[in-house]
Length: 199
Image 1 (cartoon, rainbow, N blue to C red):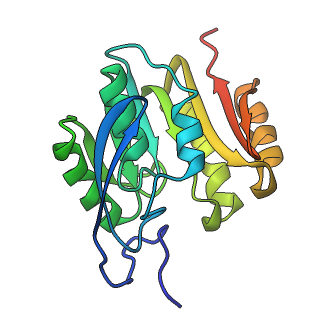
Image 2 (cartoon, one colour):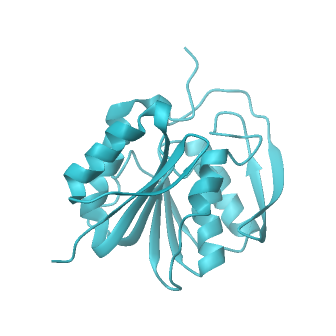
């Protein structure tokens, strides 16, 4: 069986593309390849997620399942945030490294199976367009694991389609954080946000 974009080392034949695109009114350039998520365009869910996040300058963000970097790098450039990008897919990470240089964004980028490589690192924002095809257990581990990697008052924001598990993700966020908000809905995509209470 062919390895997918949520595997460590996808085996699809290379097929490099360059996307020149405006995201959040900023011109961005991304190299993509086969074996990574949404290689031919920035997927609709990522766009909706980008449009529903605000970050203060100098705040830290963690993009979980970053792929070739469109979410984390765009947010970092738009808001002058401090980005860390992680993914299990080594091919995607190589692209993300190149894309950080191409877009002049200084980012920490490294391989991690969900949060396994992070140790005690904490962030102001955890953001994810989770790999739905990897299964519900992976999506839910992104949600539950975010809690320990957020600063007090920090938040987790994810995008997920209603038909691909938004209701169960929303329930898991409520269980984990004690709160969850539907920030936006667009064409079946939900933007869900939970805040780590600093009480």
